Image (tube, rainbow, N blue to C red; front, side, top):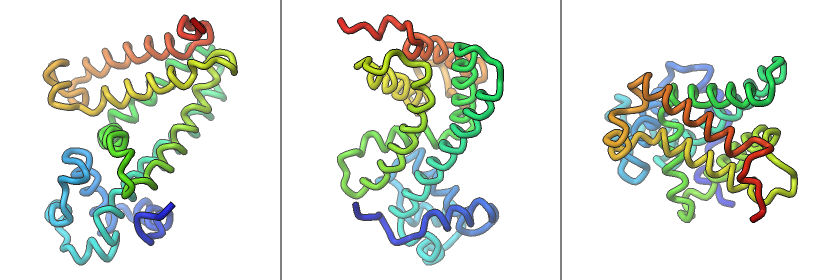
Length: 227
């Protein structure tokens, strides 16, 4: 597969993490905010320059192009999610929680992560909608890697290995989670506000997500039927 650019993303993102006040980091954060609210196509390099207070040549120096910036944002999210899974798995493994309690705690922590980082779900939703775009093909490598880690952990709560409904149940939970945090105008009108701004709504979503996860993922779920 052809890379979107020749940037060494791992090195660039390492530098952003170690130098959060740098020009590269500032540009990346501004691009993340714009991409998550307006979408890749609607954002221009000039928009990013204006938001970050940097000139276009500085953006090109650090990130080469708008597409490279988009990939950098998606890779950054993949890093966050993979680190989250590793840390959460380790913490829960060291605890004495029963499986149902462990699943509830995992859902809690996952939703907290999405609430604290609004761009993650919003960009994930956009990536799902552009899966046939050849320019974005490398982004799905990161999505698949993240999904595999989530699936690996959640599989401990799933039914028999030969259960053909596993992928359906996992994707139902995945799409629900992404959908609830895209925070669209329709969603806000239906739910009575933004999920990112209303703690009461966040608690309602958490409660519903836990019930949904228990229904979808527990080994004795009625959804494992072969009918």
